Length: 127
Image 1 (cartoon, rainbow, N blue to C red):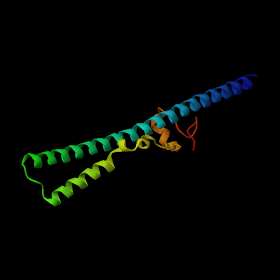
Image 2 (image 1 turned 90 degrees about the horizontal axis):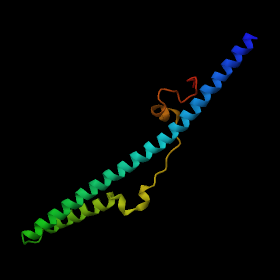
Image 3 (image 1 turned 90 degrees about the vertical axis):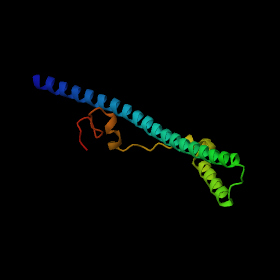
Image 4 (image 1 turned 30 degrees about the vertical axis):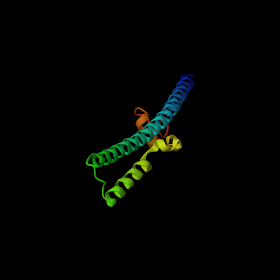
């Protein structure tokens, strides 16, 4: 009788551990997706900031040349045009679809940082 009770108790504890692990894995997957998307958006924001900085530089150089009352040399004008084209190619706001990102299916080790010490390989931590 006690053996049956101990076996039943062990089975219930195993089931509870499995349920806690499954819930933790779902939360970890959601946190992974959010983190992946956040990193993607931050990379786009960095590219946008770089594009804006280059455009500001081109504008300042162009303004300085016009204030001096002289036409900039052809090679300087060409260099500024290339800098402007580089800024345009960096700017993710010119392509609205750049905000989209395909989030990959996480591998177990990708979920580890979001599991609060639990193993991504199962409730008992086995691979």
